[in-house]
Amino acid sequence: MFIVTNVGDNRLDIEMSGKLNSDSMKIALNELVEKSESIENGKMLYTIIDFQLPTINAIGIELSRLPSMLGLISKFKRAAVLTDKSWLQKISEFKGALSPHLEIKSFDLNQRDEAESWLGK
Image 1 (cartoon, one colour):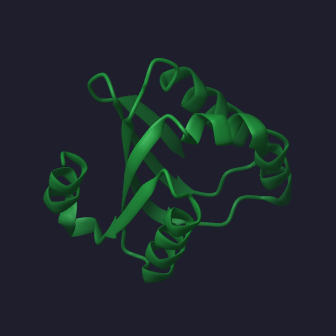
Image 2 (tube, one colour; image 1 turned 135 degrees about the vertical axis):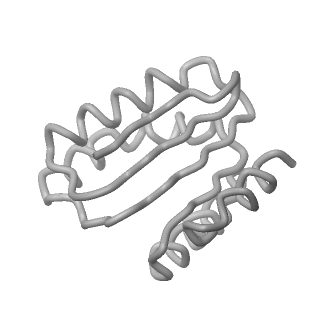
Image 3 (tube, rainbow, N blue to C red; image 1 turned 90 degrees about the horizontal axis):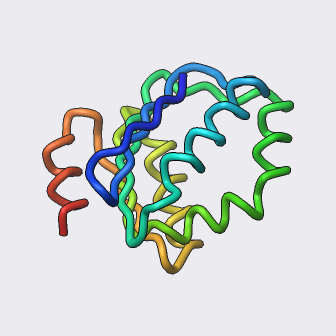
């Protein structure tokens, strides 16, 4: 499952769970692009529950759209990641370290208020 919701003018909330296959990855990326079209200096709140690695074909879809995804990411300045998996928290913050224009901070699932507060800064 991958659900993208616009929250205000400059924020997306993204919920991820389960395993993405190539069809669901196409839909997810299309929805992400569509809902972020008018965003500038944006913020994202990811909630990741029961994460499973995507299928090989889904990863291929994501890699084939890498140039457009890099452009999309440049629309955002902050991302908070809510998850109960410490390895996902570490990977998320590592990705943030590789993207100098995007600050990523991870939180436990029960820290939604703290994540919302951090995004609001």
